[in-house]
Length: 306
Ligand SMILES: Nc1ncnc2c1ncn2[C@@H]1O[C@H](COP(=O)(O)OP(=O)(O)OP(=O)(O)O)[C@@H](O)[C@H]1O
Ligand SMILES: [Mg+2]
Image (cartoon, rainbow, N blue to C red; front, top):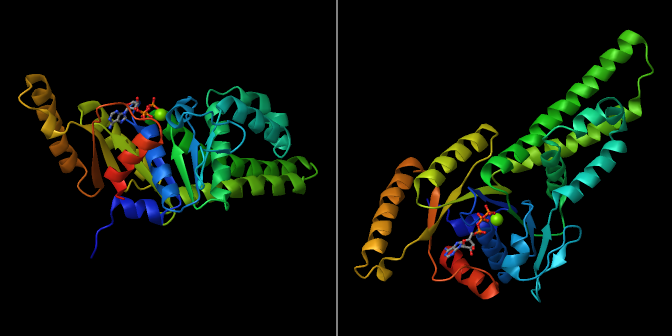
């Protein structure tokens, strides 16, 4: 049986997430995947769910928070930089609209919880699972902890909506209220949206949550934790991208580089041992940082081939 390669993952699935610890190369790997896919004829949208300007910086152009922006003169590549503050506005509007039943009773409380930004960001996120315009949607996510909180939202939120429906029904029966069928129907529509995204996220045929890490102790621990947490929600991590591996040919007897490289070798062996079933692919430490299409394409060749 032919084993699946990281390139297969990219070509076969529609929703591609790149996650990992802060600073390990998530944006770089998301941009690399998106650019490679668009170069190979897939109509691709890259979405940053991290409230930074990194996506704009790596593509050297302003990528909008409100409108899908065409990237350069690329035929098949567009980007969107979700701004949680903006998403929050939309979320609030929806709460006041569709979810008016909830917001009148619970709205102010809900809107002041510390997780509201994550709910709002995810609320936008969820809508991409309804996307039919693109062949591929690549997500550049925020550092693990934040993203895991965000991802848990639809799970909590869907349960929350279910409870609301149940409570309303019971309350109206006990107190003889007029049971608002329209509102319950609206809540059900909302719940279905969330359930659909939960299902999509854990469907191996359409989604892949790839993790990026460095061959170092802290990123390895964070990766192990993320694989476990995601697994608990039924989200599989198919592949690990091990970034910034020092190429052997640059060592040339330099004690500092040799020491760093030996440290990396130790952790590379540990990664093999701890994640035996995941596809693992290394990316070398380049002599410069990575931005602009030319450099992004070099990384793409290393990871996914010509
Ligand atoms: N293989 C590499 N060789 C050289 N530089 C790299 C490599 N991978 C990433 N970089 C550089 O490392 C820096 C961090 O990368 P990046 O912004 O992609 O990380 P991130 O995980 O998205 O960070 P954050 O957690 O802040 O979102 C960038 O300046 C990038 O150009
Ligand atoms: Mg980033």
